[in-house]
Length: 91
Image (cartoon, rainbow, N blue to C red; front, side):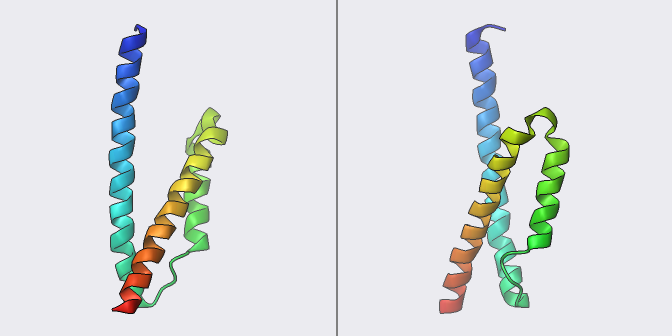
């Protein structure tokens, strides 16, 4: 592969990553509605720990690079949920 071909593949992967992150955030929006209706907290420490433990196991040699990315995704998911939760409380 030459430089242009590699960059084209990276661009494709970046688009897929973005698509999946957006889909994850959409599910976060749905999840907060369920949590709100059931009176559950937004932050579930046990669930988050399980997610991060699984990421550590599955990321192999890239763990130290992948783990912070997932921590940020989880943080953003919680922020989305908090914003929506606040909006639902107002209504």
